[in-house]
Amino acid sequence: MTPPKFRRILLKLSGEALMGDDAYGINAPMLGGIVGEVKAVADLGVEIGVVIGGGNIFRGVAGTATGMDRATADYMGMLATVMNAMALSDAMRQAGLNARVQSALNIEQVVEPYIRGKAIRYLEEGKVVIFAAGTGNPFFTTDTAAALRGSEIGAEIVLKATKVDGIYTADPKKDPSATRFARISFDEAISRNLAVLDATAFALCRDQKLPINVFSIFKRGALKRIVLGEDEGTLVHV
Image 1 (cartoon, rainbow, N blue to C red):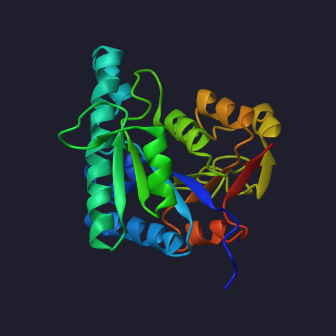
Image 2: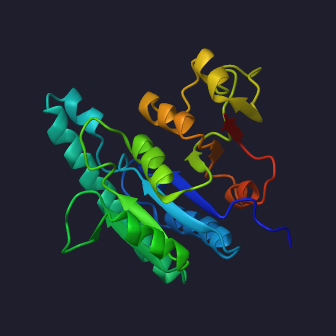
């Protein structure tokens, strides 16, 4: 068997990925499918950290559009990520994966607080660590949380799961001639103004020399292929 290319990864999942074809909430078959993809990688002995979004339940930006205070809306969004993290953890337990949820907001009756040393120990013990509540601060996205937690735990790569199988020269839904980048440098992605992650997250990954691979979570086996070093999605590198 081909050995995995990475020892420790940070997987960024959007809340929308949990919806499947539903309008909102958590789609059970979709959740189960994602857990299956993660388990296939965990079975290779890879240490996995996960940052989950909350857009399937509540988005802070959407709240501000209705006149809500931005900080309040962002905190509500963080709580939505905790709900998703709990659902993901429970689904992993049912699939035979040992998972722990750590929250950047202190909700000790429900989940553990984020403690870096403890998270690293869990990873070394083979547990999947799910990081909830973003960075714990308003005005920062879960993309930034992924870049931050990935840097803190010593992940070798950030894997951003999206609805599209990589980064394209243009929107493939609007431009049929658009082509996918197999690899692209941080500098070129900036010069082309490609929306890989939000600006803060992108800058942090670039500064920490932490590569990003953008891929489709809906493409069966894609996560495992990336971990094995195969050409899948788009790799953003220094």
